[in-house]
Image 1: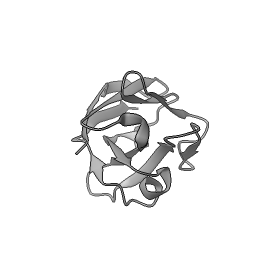
Image 2: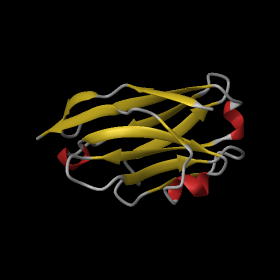
Image 3: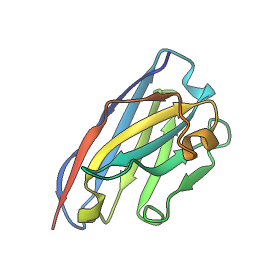
Image 4: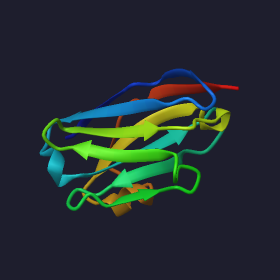
Length: 123
C-alpha cells in the first residue's frame, strides 16, 4: 500500500501561484510514477501532470503546459506541483496519484490516490 497526503491548497487570486505537495509513505517512493489530477464540481476528473519514477520525464495536459511544473524529491518521498498564472478555471480539488508507471497515471489507471486539497482561484 502507498499512502498519499496532499497539502498546499488554498484561495488565491487569478494570476497568483500555489505549490502543492504530496507526501507518500508505505512503499519505496522511487519505484512509483507520480501524478496529479483534479476534479471540479460537476465535472469529470481531469489529468494534470505526471512524472516518471526513473529519469524524471514529465507530461502535462494542454492547459497546464507552461504554467504548472511537476517535480519530485525522492529523498523526501514527496511530489510537488508548482502552479503559476492561475486562472479561475483551475479551481478544483487536486489529488495526487501513484502507480508503477507514469503512463498508467496519464491513462487514469493509477492504483493509489490521495484525498485531495482544494484550490480556489478568484477572479
